[in-house]
Image (cartoon, rainbow, N blue to C red; front, side, top):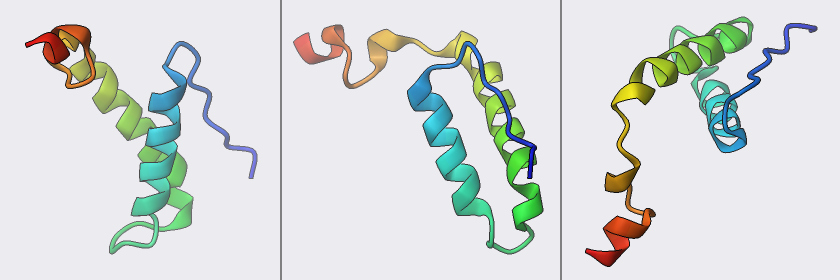
Amino acid sequence: MGNENKYEGLDAYAVRLIKHKARQLVGRPGFVEADRYDLEQELVLDLLRRLPRFDPRGWPGSAPARAA
């Protein structure tokens, strides 16, 4: 289709998860295949808006959380 979104600077895991979630949404009520790239962009925008509030110290896989 030629509409491949580029996500330079984002973590590879985050990009894979975003693409996966967008594919999951396609086919649900209100979403069609043509919406997939827009869904990806909306998910990236949501991630970028939330990142400043993210505290990795509270993440379950972080060292301080495991030590507690």
